[in-house]
Image (cartoon, rainbow, N blue to C red; front, side, top):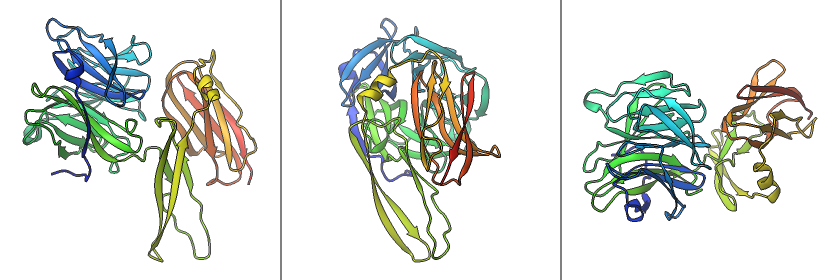
Length: 404
């Protein structure tokens, strides 16, 4: 009754036993912690609870919400944590807990929220409402109907950037057989919605907010959802989806190589969301259609953070800057450094002399700070290339030379 082979329940955080709220509603994983919203009811205070990786409560924040239940679901853009109990998405800074941004929403409240880091857009819904894609100005970019016999009672959204078929918007709803904990997924372009699974849960469980992350268990991609139930109490259920491969990519994934020749592939690592002092392992399989044989190549990545990296990451630059790559000329590796004095959606793209894009190094929201990228030109030919940064109103381009 589901599309995937995994979905084993890995862990449960008994939120109700560690809090005193009337109802637990939303969840998110950010900055190596679980964040959970609690509604205080008519006479209580709405709170946000911060749990460590093992499910231990480590901090409590006040919600910027005044309704009896507060935030229903949450999303994170890497800097701010977003929720809603009115006509806005409200973002609070993860470090300070202070309100940093508000985004108008067509819904009241905006019950389900997901963030797409590539487009820098949000997807929102409220129970049986339509599904909306919004930009940061609150403009409606898409509206997807939610009606008819397959109408979903949506309580949570989660974004899965590595869904192999492009169904990146995951939907948690109070539908399903046995328990009201149905997981579906939607393709954000075709709007096709597929049933994924009725979560294995206790009788009486109902869906709340949800999230998808590879940060909790570094080797797994997991789905986490609030399971609302008066008895045994509200919990955060964590379920295995698949092995976490968000940190590694191979280019090209397939190629035609004439007999007697050889080919090269580039392995790219993205350590942005990886924990330090942990070794990540995969096997790369190279298969030949002609010989009908395969070669298995083990790959291991150990993430280490030096004291110098920690110190640089904590510096907030006074100005924007894009520095000359080093070394230059290079073959085939070089380093690109840049400074951001304010948070913003940042792109770093490499172009050839014809103005054609040959590599996208960064396309995401980044906080203010000092950054260093490693560019691998092994798949490119010798010549002049340009690397360009765009962040907020800051735009700069610089030239580099690949010499093989």
